[in-house]
Length: 321
Image 1 (spheres, one colour):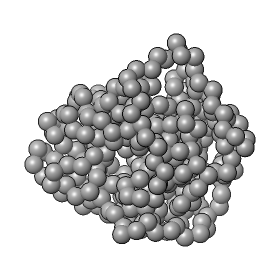
Image 2 (tube, rainbow, N blue to C red):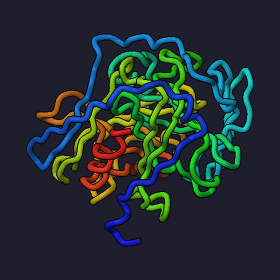
Image 3 (cartoon, one colour):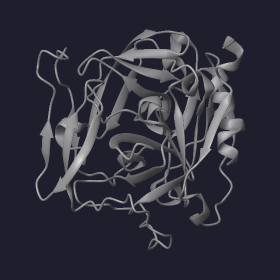
């Protein structure tokens, strides 16, 4: 595929699409700053607003948070849900299969409704082969969740996810904002057609304006020099901790390429899709510069950078849905 086509938009309508409420228009404004920086607005409500009672239909794939997962780590380091029980059970790959690297600098986030923790969520993905996996995502607009391309589209599991459940700010069995469900999925053809990590970025269009309760982070595209050594945080729901707890790691970006960044924030499968975020001079509130996509189970890890071509498509196309 020609390079110019890698950033072409790929999208898919889920089985839940016809149950969505009427949605508000996304907040679409672009601001510029030094270092070739362009960003979308972030929104922080004064306090976390309780979500209204869910009025949509609940898909058959719904998992109640009172159920604990039986998780199995697969060779590609994703965590698959193989059963539900009253106690969590995690089966990890043998230590020699994927050696850990670096020190574990994660901390558990217990106050998940505090800012900015409440914009992060646990993702439950069901694919055409009926297998279910866990992932993470970050609210970046009123009903828009940034995640990884391999969360919404897995060639190994038959392609586009058939159902995606998003639990913002989940804290074990507690869902402060309930569950929302994806009605549309977005990614780039560079991922769906060629599985290029440069374009391993996706988005969930939710069935309600959850961001009005949680708030959301902005998106940022900026120069290499404004990313190198910059302090970032990855907050997600790792499988080795049971998949239902929010854990965060903060560390510097250690390498920058045109469409990827690497950082020393420790991650595990289940963190895929988490927004890689930080604070930048001249930019209000926290902004996401990449989505977390890969790593050795440890450090360094890789994010699919919001390069200008991807940023433009997200703002001009994805946010319009």
